[in-house]
Structure formats: C-alpha cells, structure tokens
Length: 255
Image 1: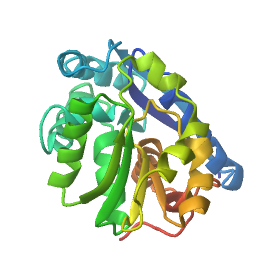
Image 2: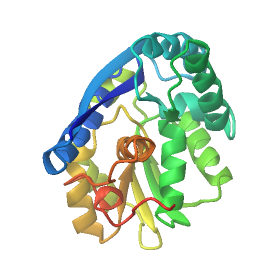
Image 3: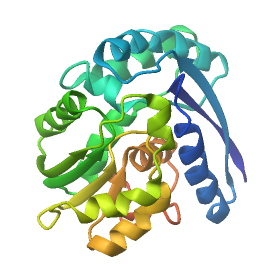
C-alpha cells in the first residue's frame, strides 16, 4: 500500500538548492520504492549574506518556521542550513532539534526535527569515518567554525578548502562541475570520507559519483546526509540511486 509523506524544510530565504537536491533524491528513491511517496513544503528565514550576525538573526526565525510547518502536519521537518547551526556553538544542533520539536508539539502536530548539521555529523559516524576532507563555500572564518564544530564531534580534518563565496545566491550558482578539480588539488589519501559540500546551498549532487570514481573514497554532502536522516526518521530504506555511498544501501539503519 502506498503512503505519502509530507517533508517540511526550514530554508534560508536565499537558498535555491535544498528544495531541488533533497526532492530530487527522495523522488529517485520513489522510483525504486514506488509505494513511498513524498510532498514537499517549506518555510523561509531571511538571510542574504553568509555572515555570523546575519546567521544568528536568521536562526531566531526558525521557531516561527517550525510552527508554520506544523500547521501542515508534516511527517518530518528539516532545518536546511548547516552553517547557521554550527555558528551558534558546539553541539547546538542537539539544542535546536529539541527546541523545534517542542514547538511542533506545542501546536498539537509533533514532528521529528533534523538539522543538516546534525545529519552530517551522524552520517559520518554511520560511515565509520575518523578522518575527513572537507569542501565548504564559506568565507575563511566561518569555514574554520565549521571545521572546529566537526572536530569537536570527534573527527580529524585532514585537508579542507574554503571557497570564500560571501553571497548566498552566488553559493547556489557555484558550478558543481568545478568540484572534482577542487578535490583533485587536495590531499585526500588519508581521508575516510570526503565531504564534498559542507553546505546545503552549494550544488554538489551531480559531481558525487565522479569524485567517488576519481578518488576511490566515499563522498558525502550535507544534502545527502539530510536525505538519509529523513528516510531514517520515516523508517524507509536508505537507498537512492546516484547519491553516493551513504545512500547506496551499504549503510542500513542499526536497530
């Protein structure tokens, strides 16, 4: 019997990628699991420039967004901005997830909340990663915050690149075809996993298979990790064709 799941996303107002890559992966899943069907619903927080003060102001709007999406009685709710969470301090994804879940409960429509930041950390643990290589579009200070946040969760960053794109619309316009060349210039020999995009706004999905073939390493992105977390919350098979190692079926959920 088919079931339709409502996928809610809290999205920065200038984000143009999360509402394309996550639906693309879930609809690809639907092609091989036709009984799993999805609709997509978003609420937006104002943000144009990826700067720490603007990210903090944006995060304050997430409570309103969670309430709005709970009005639609979504089945799962994703906070689709990794750096906004990581810029708020170590471990903040756990605080945010608990608070926003409580907001949905207060509206009589409890929905599990995931964050792209928490999903990335959890995915690296699922994949057994200890050492990672990282590509991020942010300016150097924010990229360092992201590195420190991930390191605080128990991972070693063996190499990294900050693309230093300040405008969030420009991040969304970054050509994913450039990513294999960027990774080719990195030292990934000791990396267990390559995080090809530590950002849900930087398009990366079209380059994942190429970078896996090029490096022989598993490749993960924030959007792929978020999709895995969504499927896990819904208790659906974590399989999406063409979405890298994590969604290949090699990492079923632990009981």
